[in-house]
Image 1 (cartoon, rainbow over the protein chains, first blue to last red):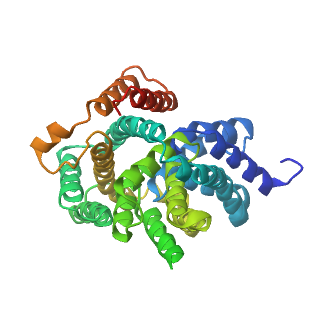
Image 2 (tube, rainbow over the protein chains, first blue to last red):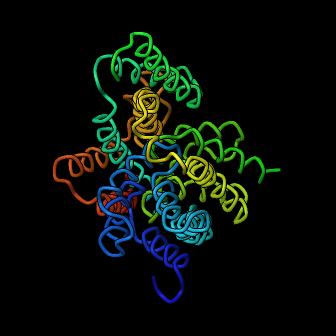
Length: 186
Length: 190
């Protein structure tokens, strides 16, 4: 730990990760691994795999979950808060700065055209994310039906996404109950 | 009151979104429409800016929605709202965090949630496509063909090709697409 103390170091490491990774939370994962496992040697790589799996199964942003878990492990509650603040603050500062300029230049035609071009690219980026998620989510016919049904309900029947998530949780609970009654091995 | 509404909306979004920022897009869109905070076009601009700035998409979009709705303090409460559920849940479960993942109940629930998350990301694809590739709404198939913006569609197809086949770095693709938009604007096409 450096001269600023462990809490500050947690803050700085996650601040750096938050400030320099483009492409969202999943793009941060290799950087977090590099800093926390290789450089700082705070957590061994096997434990880090566990932490990443847990942070992806919790609700919320993956980057925030990872920062909170690593922070908690290194310095309990204060550590968790320092690491989380560190990963969130760069976004907050950068976006607020952009926001002040952004709202003023939005009337410029070229800026709108640039954002429209980027929007078209975002469609492709989202498709890349969909393919990545599909690899873990699609296991058999039932999961395809759930995904297609949920999409129909959300996009065309205007079902609130929260209810769709609750239905997914319900389906999971039903599968668990079914397996318990059957007495089958999980 | 707007600050309280922003905080509550983003707390709800943070609590019910799984699989990161992309799955949040339909949730945020629903809240924006319910409160009349931003139009669909403005929200797509927010997503675009969130993609091209460093940091988690979830935090970037929360901050920008909050900022555009109610200034700096609005950005702060929205960011706090989207962050707190993670912090609270992780800290509340810290004692059994490492057993959590392996518990069959948790695994079953996650297997149920994952296809829904996939549907949410597809809904996000359709939402952003609707507001960038088409000049009108996607209400009828015939209107859809007439109102397709061929230039935006071309940018989408080229970027999809580059991302899927040639594995081009996403940030380079974003910059190139923005540049293409500007070029098309000066040629009078966008």
